[in-house]
Image (cartoon, rainbow, N blue to C red; front, side, top):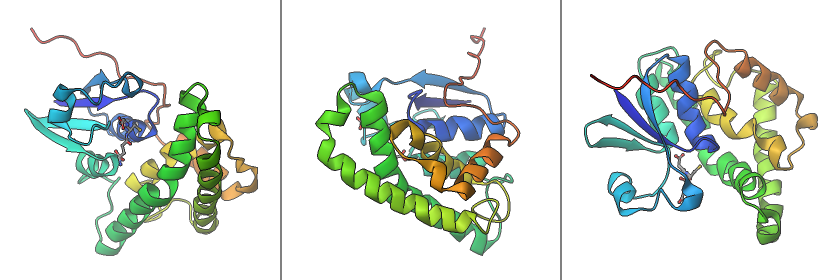
Length: 210
Ligand SMILES: N[C@@H](CCC(=O)N[C@@H](CS)C(=O)NCC(=O)O)C(=O)O
């Protein structure tokens, strides 16, 4: 049985909740409030020295960090992970793109504008860069999605889950998606996938063991 250390409003944590819900995999959810420093305690750092959520305990004292690595672990062998070599590399290509070009910009803007009171003033200068680079990433995605229903392999995969998390939050942090019709259509396709859950959703608490 997995234990997922997650924060409800974290897009990176949401990716893992989305995949586990789609795959109907039960798990124990532990809420970690990063705003209160709960991911920086000695106990948490012993589990993940990066001090980040999400973190998945896959066996006693065996942890996997990094949202996109966790996606590959939980979805391995399912339709969410492509089998052939090119498609696997393409999925990784988009997941590295997500971490390098999308998450550091839209994720940072979301954190400071949507989660931190007074964040806009504190990050006024950084925000300009996040907006410019975030729009750059959205432009790349729009070009691809104008020709493809999903990012890889013609179907919903871990690459879509990784990219959906922060893209669907973009309008909560100043990004205007009206200029990106292919992205909006893709967001709707992902939201219509079986087992889709919102970022607010939580699994039912598991019954305590006898
Ligand atoms: N590359 C990591 C990033 C994880 C990350 O930045 N997590 C944030 C929440 S979205 C966090 O835990 N921040 C707490 C901190 O830095 O103290 C991933 O994809 O999992």
